[in-house]
Image (cartoon, rainbow, N blue to C red; front, side, top):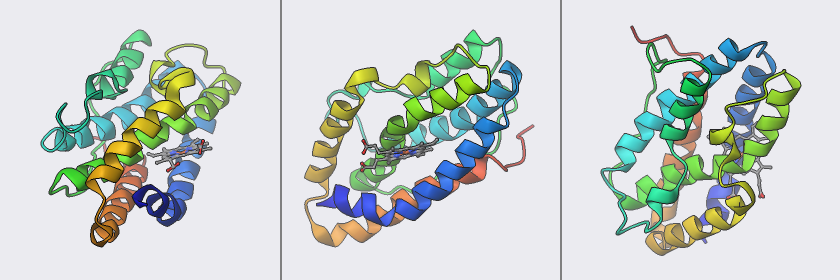
Length: 186
Ligand code: HEM
């Protein structure tokens, strides 16, 4: 099954990206710093979503409109009094077809599972609001990932396509990690 391969073969990239996110969350001292963190998430998720929308619509993923996306990040930034100007540069993975798009989206959707941990860490840093993005689907997060994975498996039924899927997912993780050290866009 493609999901098992993705989970196993992106494990190292997950750990690396997770450490980068944890490091950045732990250095937060006030809401301004939290806005900066959210802007990195926004820059990347928004850029990747633009690529995904070329290959995924409701005919591929019927509940796409109910899924968390970068608009939730924007709303959190605005709630904190920030804006989406001067974003860090985000390099998106190259995506050529629907399965590659779903493989990149697996990384974005899967990241919801880390949300509760991130919220706990933010609370320890004194942050108490603008958690809509990291809240994901709340108690339904596991179920929503399951529904997404069913679509992923359908498009990834041919094992010959799996190495390319893993490659795209790894690139999606790694490029995200790089946003945190990227130059700001003027
Ligand atoms: C503080 C940061 C993070 C923590 C603590 C964390 C933790 C976790 C945990 C515990 C799971 C497993 C959930 C389960 O099986 O029920 C998970 C799954 C996952 N996470 Fe993270 N995560 C973090 C950040 C991220 C980020 C930044 C991304 C991607 C940009 C990401 C992508 C994924 C993916 C794709 C899965 C699904 C694996 C699968 O079950 O197939 N995570 N994460």
